[in-house]
Length: 448
Image (cartoon, rainbow, N blue to C red; front, side, top):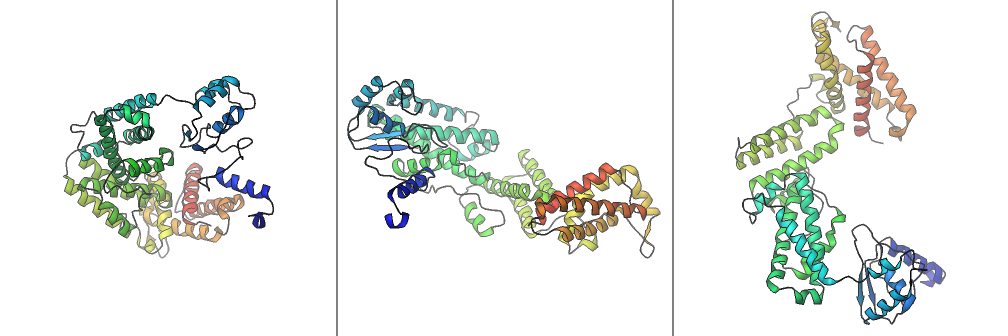
């Protein structure tokens, strides 16, 4: 290490930085880091050394900082220093203790039986969440209740609180011995049951992993104290386009409605992420999904029909088959199709409102005396807008205000030319709205 870092101070600074950043899980020291060292994420301090007075308080203070995913620190004492800690707390009033006053330090020793009371309360709150369920032992009924996102968030939070309290109790000899065996078993069984529910609903409703929920601690509790067969660690939701992985994930879900919900939630998530790339295209799938869900919730269709229809929508979605009818000239131009959708959503309503579409259909002549519809006008606009974007899109264009201004000007000129040709006449505010929506779509489709 000396050869690598040059001197002891550089080595020590490197190790401390890696520990603070979470790259090192366990740090063993003899006389170091009792002062002048702050690592809020430090959660457990193992003491196997005689410490007294100020030095003991400084050691305790190493874990006495809040951090994301951490509400308190734990001290594992191999030397029986409780009396020494009492004496030190009474002796010092906070001077030199990194802004911890005597009241903070007295809170370092917590009555473990108070945690037992917390465990009982958190268990009751968790059970009360499912009072609306007819059969609280039926996973499918519980999972359907958890379709409500706000209830689901409450469930995740309550289960994490329950798990944290249960972890402390199961790791405390005093609490373990003073809690009746039947009560302990009830809590362990409940945590195992709800952990399975949690995994299932995260798959079913495509919820991401929130590390604030003590994912590692909860998994450790399951591995160390509970025997929960078949409960794997949660991973990020599988993308709807990853068919093989999605199939494996769906196999873990029991009912057809659960599988349908899992597919639906992944499609909805993917649509939300990609929506600005082609609003009209993705909205067509969103409407089909919403209508199918509405019919299922109103019991117009059965579980099997719900699953069948969602699967059919997924097949169309992954294959890019939509019910949108594009003009023939846009058949092989995906970018122009996107701009057709984003401009058409604005222009069709405007043309219908002003009656221009009727006049164009009757009067307007363009190229070889061919009559044109509003769809053809918007299609031609979409093609020319695509050419403008392709001309200006280059490295770093997405953050280049000068290029954005040139795109604005070129599209504005395009509308002026169409007006001069008698093809289209629009108010300035409508043109500005089209330009902004076009740029938003272009930023998603034409990445640097």
